[in-house]
Image 1 (cartoon, rainbow, N blue to C red):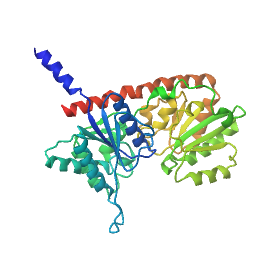
Image 2: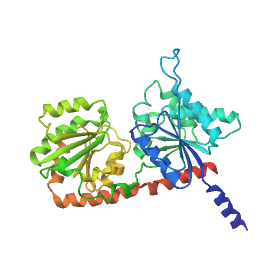
Image 3: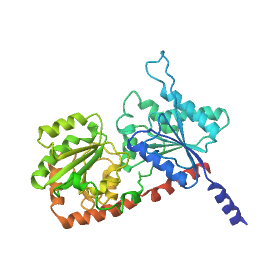
Length: 389
C-alpha cells in the first residue's frame, strides 16, 4: 500500500511543467544554450515561456509548447537609460500570473537574477511561491559581475535564489573566489545536440575554402578582445609556411576591422576567409581539419564542443572550463594562453601526422557524447522536480 502511494506521488511529481526561462536573445553562448534547453524541454511535453527583449536567434521557427514573451521598454524623456530591469521584473510577474508558471530559470546573472528575485518577492505578497533557479554562464561572473557597480547586487541575488548552477567547475570556483556566496553551487555542464553535428556529407564548402586541397583551420567567435583572434592570425602565419592551409573565421564583432587590418599587414589576405555570422555552424564545422580557440577566458567553450562533435580536433588555450571539455593529447591539444607560437607548433604537428589526426577525430566525437543534450537535460528536469517537491 505504501509503495502504491509513493508511485502515485512520483507520477504527480512528473507532470509537465510551466517553465519560465529568462535569457539574452543574442548569439552569445548563454542565450543559445537557454533557447536549446527550452526547445528540448518542450519536446518532452513541458510548456516553455521564453522571456527577453527580442526574439532569441535560435528560436527561428515554430516550436510546439514554446511561447515567446517580449519585454517592452517604454521610452520616457526623463530617463537617460531605459530601466530594463524594472520592465523585466514586471514582465516576469505578469507571465507568472497569466501562464501559471511553476518555476523560473534565469540564464546569466546580470540583470536577470536581481530582476527575478524582485519578481519573486512581489509574487510572494500575492500568495504565490515561484521557485527560482539561476545559471551562471561566464562573463556575468568573471568580467561584468566583479565590477564594483554590480557586485553587491549580484552577490545578494545569487545568495537568495533557490538554486544556483554553473556551467563548469572552473566557473563555480571563480564565483566562490570572487563573491561572498553562502550557498552551494551545482555544476551542470553546457550541452549540444550531438546528432546535429554528425553524419554530414563529405562534400561541403571545401572546394570554395580550399580549392587546391589545403588544410582548413576554423574559428568561431564574437570577435571580442577576450577571444584573442590576433593570436590566431599570427599563429596561422607560422602554420601556413609549413602546411598549405587556409583560415576560416566565422562570426563578427568589435574587433573585426582590426583583425582584417592584421590579416592584410601579414600578407594573408588570400588565405583568410571571413564568413560572418551564421545562425548554425553544424553545416560547416565538419569541413574543417582543425578548430582553434585562443581565448583569455572561457567558462566552458561551446564552440570547441561543437567542433569536437563534428569530428574536428581542437587546439585551445588552457583556460577556464575548456580543460573539462577537451582532453589534452587525445581530442587535440591545450597550450598556454598568449603563446601563439606554441599554438602554431601543435597545429603543425597535428596537421602533418595523419595517424594522430585520425585518432584525435575519433576521440573528439566520442568525448562530445558526454555533453549531449540527452545526457544533460535529465539533470535539469530532476532539479526542477526536486524544487516542485
